[in-house]
Image (tube, rainbow, N blue to C red; front, side):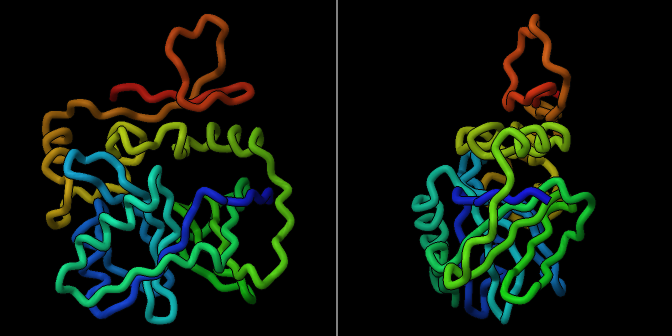
Length: 232
């Protein structure tokens, strides 16, 4: 099971009695926690562009988020601006933790498990994110960018700086599955609902073999196959 340091990710802790309602009001996916569940969701701006991707779970009466964003500081400022009178506190604990990706490990649970001092977060049944204290030794990272890229291509997994950025919405980068079609109001919802209703501007992520005469540009270039976003 190859491991890569996930240095692009940040760790946020949300505390307070209004946390679940607060996050649900901002996110594209429905936030209703059950034991050990991981919720993958997005926070959007008023143009439905992606401010950040959040992998959320409950731990010791807190909500923890492993978060990726083009501009993490902007995302945190946006979240803090939405607290208003709610009892919510947000703390960045990235500097206290190592964050790794473990991939190419076969089918996994979409759940959180604890193995000694490591929190293992199953993402969409496809890969794991591991979170552990910097007081421990860093685990051996034996993966490499080429194998990770080829694994993503084979499994149709969009990624930041490739398919995902703050210039696209979820339907333009292969993250439509993180949009709950029947949840309550959130920023950007009207735009996504209109796109879905009109079936306009929605893309699907596909993988195909590399060809020398390929006219369209891949979003992720693999060794033998690459990822492309095409209108559905």
